[in-house]
Image (cartoon, rainbow, N blue to C red; front, side, top):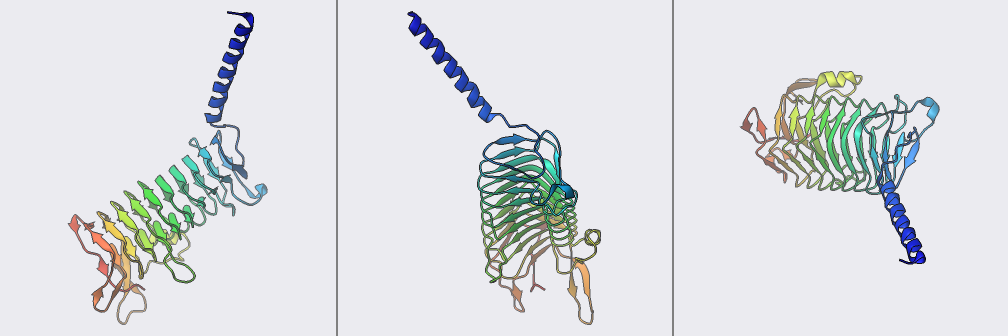
Length: 319
C-alpha cells in the first residue's frame, strides 16, 4: 500500500469512528441538571434530581417540552410547592414524558399541541387538574395515576382521538376521569376519545363522565365509591355530591359506547317530593338522555356489571 493510500485509509477510518460516536451522542439522554423554568426541545433528556419551584422562581411552567422532545423523569419529582405555576407543559407535536411525579402545581401536566405520549406518571395534590388535555388531539396516556387533585384527575377538554389506558384517578375533588366537550356555543367538541382498562375510586363527583361528547368509548373500566362525601370535604366541602354516578353520560351526548365496565358503591341522589335536598342513594350507571317516556339515548351500554350481574343504566333526565 502506498503511503498516500495508507494516510487516506487512516483518515477515512478516523472519520467513520468520529461519525459513529457523534451519532451515539445524539441518542444518549442529556442528563445535566434541569432547573425550574427550563424549556426543553428537540432531544432526549433525563432528570438527575428533583425539580423544585417556589415563589422566588417566577411564573410560567416548571418545565416546558417542545416538539420531538423526550423527558425521562427517572423516578424524580417536579414540585411546585403550591405556587400558581403549571407543572409540565407539553406543546407542539410528538413529545414523550415518563417515569416520575408531579406535585403541588396549578395543573400537574398540561397537554397542548398533538400526538404526545405520557407513561408511568403520578400527578398528585395539584390545585386544579392532575392532567388536563386542552384542545389537543391524538395523545396516548398509559399507566398514569392522578390522585388527590382539587378538581379532576384526568380531564380531556374539547379534544379528539385521545386514549387513556390502565390508569387510575382517585380521591379527586370533582370527577375521576372526564371527557368534556362543552363549548360556549353548546356544540359537542370531544369525539373519538377512549378510556380503557382504567379505574376511578373515591372521587367527589362522577367516577368517569362523558359531558357533551359524541362517539367516545369507555371499555373494561371500574368505578367504585364515587360521589364520595369525604373526598368533597377534603377539598373544602364546596362540591357536595348531587347527581353523580360511577359512569355518567350527560344530556346531549350521543353515539358513545360503554362496554364491559364494572361499578359498585357509587352514590348519587334525587330530589324527592317535599324534600329540600337530595336523598343519597346508589347510582352506578347513568344515561341522562331521557324524557317522561323513558330512554331515547343513542348511546350503547353493553355488558356492564354491578355485583356480578349485567345491568342496564338508569336512564333519567339530568339535573
